[in-house]
Length: 179
Image (cartoon, rainbow, N blue to C red; front, top):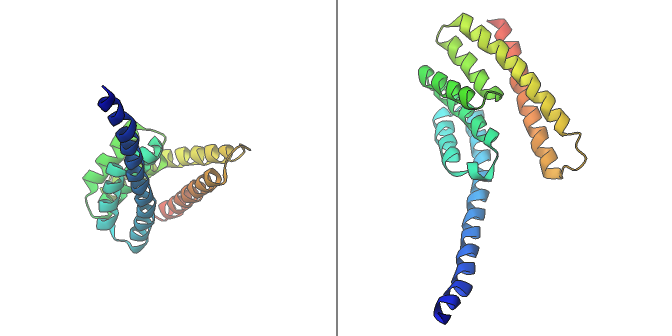
């Protein structure tokens, strides 16, 4: 019995500490991978965007919120669309919308995929839906910034999401009108 108690007292904390180090290393890698994903997006390397996004979905989502998972599905749909896999992109976007309706990136990719497939009327409806959802999402983010209890990291994250979604909305509305 004493041996068993000794084992629990000595080895369980060591196992837990080891697990914490593994989790911290994975968390740190997930942060670095965000930069890699952004670099791949800027470079237009959509094979890399797809590979990195799939890795993030499989490894990093336990560190982030559920909305981040759905944003990643939006990135995956973007990669598939840019790689010419239009039906796959549309399927991913629609699955994302079905699971979490309020994610703007999924509506954006649905509209762009429908447009690329030549389904203009459906694309226009989806595009209008994206605009309304994105505007609402931006309003929600701005409201969150009014919370005086936010830490610096939270403020930076919210501002980053605001910047991203404003850019998505501005780019979409500018480019959509041209076509």
